[in-house]
Length: 78
Image (tube, rainbow, N blue to C red; front, side, top):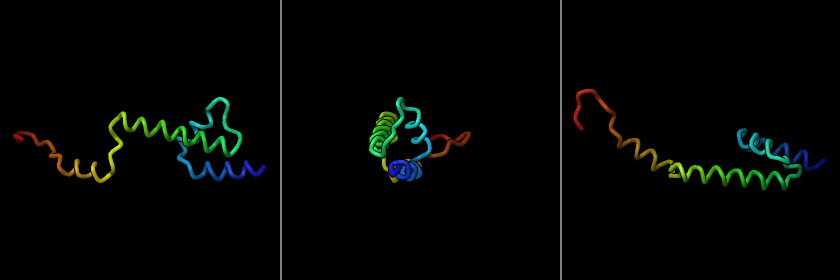
């Protein structure tokens, strides 16, 4: 019963999409240790996807890139 309360509290701290992905696993995790492992595994998949898509840059680099990007204007030659 102790695991149930821990699992509930742990889920509250996770991204809802992550919780959903963990719940649809077969079989779904039943202990808090299983939840820890499943969450770490799913986060690893998410981080790898960011790297593959090139979205793993720190936020400040993205902001700098946006600030230097010129907005297109009709009739203007860049």
